[in-house]
Image 1: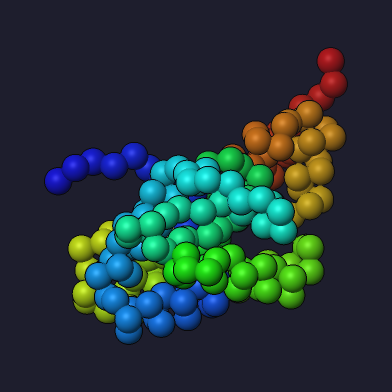
Image 2 (image 1 turned 60 degrees about the vertical axis):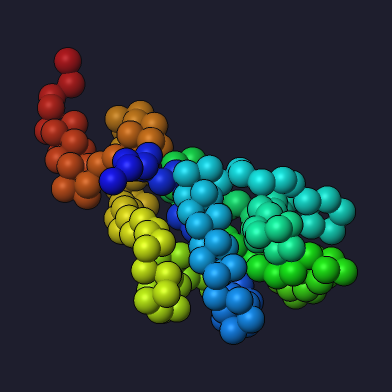
Length: 189
């Protein structure tokens, strides 16, 4: 079995994109398999595909099949701001004919406030939900979110020990508390 690099992005599908896949599955189950395989590319290369323009700046597309279908997504980051945890949200899957997928995506984007994120589900979960037909398409499980330190603790590490946000993010709460206790209990020279 081939060894694939560790994913750089967590691929998530909005509920609208899942509904798109279910409609497409009724029409052509084989193309859905191809869509899933293309989505797996996003796990390793979140900036794959081509950027979109005009009202859809910030979104990208991947072509599926005989250039008839498009996967359209935007790239975001998670709460830790680590680039290895970039999230590629798949927004729409649809036919190219008459730019139908882009018109629908534009309607979806217009309904979102600038800071809102739609509810999205992990690719691996969608593949499992859609059934055994796609069993050989293997997506990566999403990592558990790293526990975040209480703000008072992170602030203490930053102000008293001058640790960077990256160093703080790598610490467990117990490690962080021990560092501060050690700092506070060491007499000044």
